[in-house]
Length: 473
Ligand code: PA5
Image 1 (cartoon, helix red, strand yellow):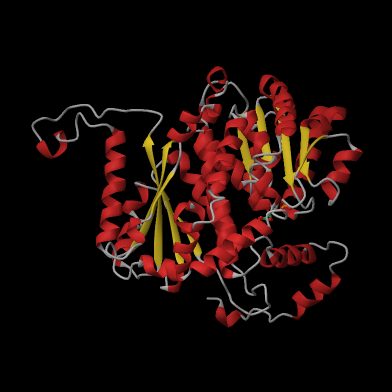
Image 2 (image 1 turned 90 degrees about the horizontal axis):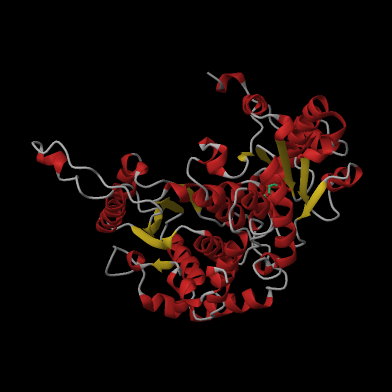
């Protein structure tokens, strides 16, 4: 039996959402429980929408319907972990941020620097940019003969990812010859786009992004599961954690539904002018969860038009910070700056390492007092102290605590934030699952690079106001 099948393990690993510091009596202009009660009908309607639209939210089924895929992935990765030295993800946005966040959360913090026998799997690189220096440097540090590239693009047409595919195809042909396609695993849509055509033509191993699963909601399908399994992460436990949270968040009562409550509180905060949502993990392992969340929250909620066609220009700007590092960079602003933000702390009860601060310099009491404490106690005290300072200054915050960082709790966290985002979309009456603003930029890039079919877009770009030299100094 796996540990996540044990109810006592599951319950001991339940993540906690503490929103005291959003509420009246704790911060100036805090939320009165009566406001939440007054919105009862709105919240109940949004909860009903979440139920009625569930059939279209295919990402919600990922924790429950992938046992066959998980078996296929585990079978595939056994060979990869054994034989290859480098596993390189090529993708961007929702095709990269999840794999980065989950790897950082659940693998050794210096995974790539570990010797092979301690790593027990290939080094992982996730290439989510097209900076030419970065591309060139990648090819300098990997050995193509011992590399598998996982090309991930749901649309199968994103310029950045397809340019990367062209680069590695060319390099592989030169280095390994006829077997080049065996070094590429495609993750894409079953039918749509160019990558699936290429994968079929050259007989590449292929995993699919299920229909109805958008990029930023795709971490729990092969987009994220393959790289995670390659690095030794228990993907069944990850999915079990997400399933556990999904069940908790089926509760229509907002007072017992952490995703709904977090979304509702953020929207009430927006009404008070808090247009910024700072996510501040107090764990290096969760550092890139803030990046993953930033895309999810920004791309899903940043919408000009609501479902009824009204111009709304909705959204709340996500900002990433890291505790304790950014206490020495951002917290001055968070305490004494404008009342335009909510800080969401990510805290951890039990870190995976305990490091004691040794005694020393006993003749200098202002240093010696640290000796005998642990770094664990230090970082947790600093989180508590920062939460206190922000509350005392009257600014809102909430804290999401993981009993420890493991696949079960990370699965919960991913699901919590996805459901929070979807529910916020319902409260805002916007489509949280499209990204017309991103498409505009993609189309302009195609036009600039001469993609067939984009002549009209090119003409539109040419007709746009040209930059004037007098404004460039
Ligand atoms: O969330 C989204 O849909 C986007 O951020 C996409 O993930 C991103 O644009 C990459 O798209 P694709 O996976 O089609 O290459």
